[in-house]
Image (cartoon, rainbow, N blue to C red; front, side, top):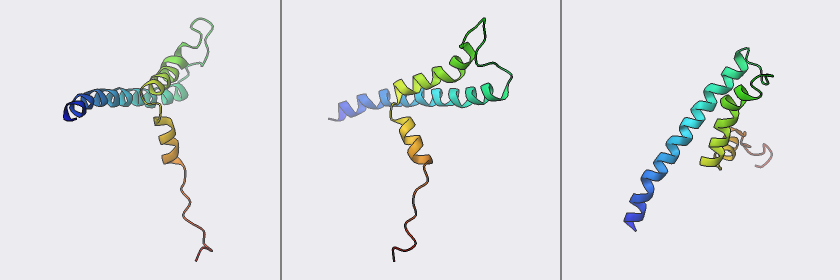
Length: 87
């Protein structure tokens, strides 16, 4: 049992590190795309800038951590504090 747990830990750590890198890449790429005069679509390059700044890290996150977007949405959703008339 312990060998399986020890063997799985480095693989899980690498996966989390890759997901963190993809999240940082997305966190840097999205503001770059929004705040700079980069076009979303260029006749010469196509969707290249939008893909490499936003699409690629999203695809990588979806492959590495498929539950992460749902967890982020769940964390960002306001939680009900209860009804005022429940007393």
